[in-house]
Image (cartoon, rainbow, N blue to C red):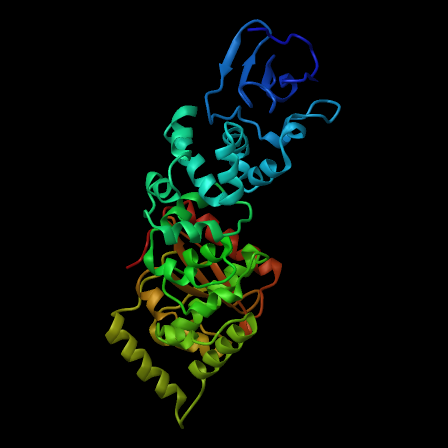
Length: 399
């Protein structure tokens, strides 16, 4: 095997040479076969005398395709067809593997263009199983339903059509496992099948909600929705369902952000409304009902500090929502389940703080002022530092 020994990067017709010495801190060169070579995107690295590593099929050299440029700005990407590069950009963490998989045959490239999500899932499966080129090619000759079955999804023509219809935006590595799980859940698939313009964001929304919703809810999200947009929709739906005692029908007819906001505001007003002659007595009676339903109010999972104090009873939870004119009074179910705990900040400003139990630790969920106003940056920083400091002490879940 001929080794490149020149001290700078340079590009040949069928092989690309990259000097990584400055990046890695020791003498090392990476050689990648070009798109037109007999072994597209095959690679090896050497230290001018010996081969240090050699990549197998669907094994990346550790650098993204889009960073492999020489000193003149020419690089591997310039040889890769535009349509293939477009698919690779949908999964930046696997861009090299996706390009390499597309290069092996017309069948691979056709699947990538026709059903990019299925192709990405297949390449991820083949990579984890360390499949050879021939084994990967054998799968490509299968029917789409058989490919679904091979990678662990239901062997269904309708699922094949659905997966083909899902438009994509760039995927994060951990999302692939979540997407696979979502595509096995019949209740989620029933919602997705009837939506006209499916996008990965609809899967992201349903995975975050973790409970059934009305089909019209999908219309609130589209391909342009940001992570923050999806988080807002999830929070509004969760709060609305809490105030409606988990009655999904309350969301019937909601198909826009405006309609969801209006529903939420109506429910907050109704939940906190002072009706009758003695609202305090009514809240006390409701607090007693909550105690009978859930038992004693949980103990705080994170120790209080000056200016931040825990709510200590179901009555205080109801009074916090009424006083601050938001929906925290409806959080009794997640509080009882140990999923949420509510604190109030009294200094430097008046805020309601909802901590959430995620991934075996308590994190900041929501921080809201009067009528759901946003906190000041300074107050929010105090809350985050308080929770981060307490997290190192190993606080546990309540309930």
